[in-house]
Amino acid sequence: MRFRRLSAAVGAAGLLVAGLAACGGDKTYATVLEKVQDGGTVVVGTKWDQPSLGLKKGAEPEGFDVDVAKAVLKEMNGGKDVQITWKESASSNREPFLQNGTVDIIFATYSITEARKQKVTFGGPYVVAHQDVMVRGNDTSISTPQDLKGKRICKAAGSNSYKRITDPPPDGQLDLDAQLVDAANYSECVQKLQGNNLDAVTTDDLILAGFAKQAAASGGQFKVLGQPFTDEKYGVGLKKGDTKTCEAVNAAIKKLWDNGTMKQLQEKWFGGIQGLKLTESAPPAEGCA
Ligand code: GLU
View 1 (cartoon, rainbow, N blue to C red):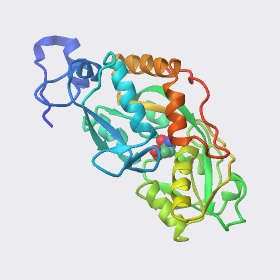
View 2 (view 1 turned 120 degrees about the vertical axis):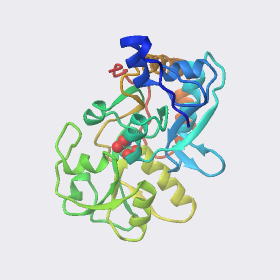
View 3 (view 1 turned 135 degrees about the vertical axis):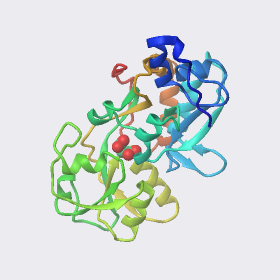
């Protein structure tokens, strides 16, 4: 991926522009929006290991976040499909990938948090998930999130979910003592739960629903408590300062709520899952800072 600097002659505005330049091809763009509207190939970061959200099976990932990414970009391009290169963006890679231009935009179960707002401009939220807890089907010792005190919980690198258990607000919640077991991502967390290397995977209900559904299909048994205790506002990650693109993302999300697409996509990937609280109406936009 080539990254060409703009001429210094463009002055102060140019500095800002060079700082934001979207990566790709022979051309440099001031914003991701410009790249989309010029027919450029957009590098989109998603998860590749989370069933029903972003899961790479064949050539491309599939899932709710992948479909939302395609729909938002298409709206931003006046209804025309956008060429996309998909790039795996694990929780731990999201901020660095936006900062160093590896990706243009991220749709990856990416909660808008206070700490991340310092480094990332967030469009959205497009839906609101809620943190819940998943345990082995035969575990009767954990029946509420508070029961995680003293238990082994998964710490997926770069994710905020473990903090919701161990830290106080704003980015934490319950402020409990729990033992943290490291994992690279949520699929590794789930393997460790299966293998009895930890006691619970606690993260967004949509993520847990995807894994529980996949496990049920292959005979594995997990139990989701069904006790959501946070609001996880799923944002669209952009390089800090790209407010033009952020505003276009927010307009696209509004349209996709107004025309029923966001409801349809939630139904497509999460319909019929018992006890799962889907987002009913457009969540208020956070504002592009
Ligand atoms: N939504 C939470 C977060 O952004 C958990 C899922 C994830 O790490 O992707 O931290």
